[in-house]
Image (tube, rainbow, N blue to C red; front, side, top):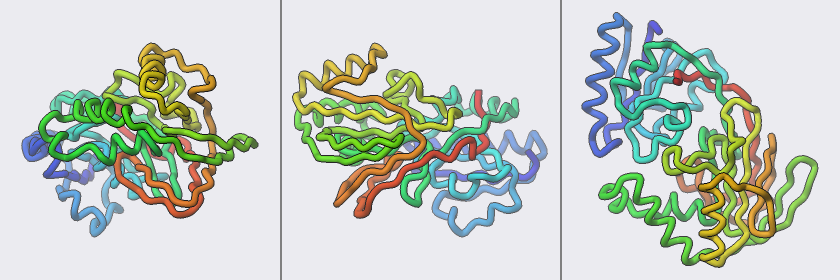
Length: 285
């Protein structure tokens, strides 16, 4: 770690980013590193060529904006979690305390992790449709400001009371599946609500596959029973839900709204999803 680019999201963490930035600068000064700090808004106008290490101060959205600049390179990503969810940090056991997160970077333990490619965009966590997209995209910012990540849990209860089915046709593992579903989640990292639950115990950032969870039911009571199954790690495919792994997936699409790592997307063409194995280097615990 000689030349470091620090990318700060000043709006992250209820304005904690400015405090965390000072801690990062102090850390780099102690290590006698050459470094430059920029705000996330300057990302596209920054040349990454001169930097071997990238440190982000923000949440999953901040990390996801950085991925296109470092994928399939030798640059190493360090994360100082400072967002609403921080799911990637949780998956990698990176502490939410900034000083302890810096200790992870200082130890220089590096993992090569997989990345999803959704159409021409990269996803470090997951992409989702239906119920999953509603929670991510329709939870009011005012609710997130007041309750933090717990706001998604509250929204999840609300949206579960008005589930809607949509027709999907999927191609994967030499199979074709036509299905009515209320929720489809394609996950590189399947953890939700920090690390409390996951759509699959098999979800592994280094296995060269992604996990798919399809919820078919629209009855709220049945849904909550399936959700309890998720909590207690009972995840067998049945008439109400499906689980499988794949390396490539094609979803036939006329018009769908979904999300990629929490960012709302409108898909007008068929949706192609594939995994890029071990394509990002990252400091982790």
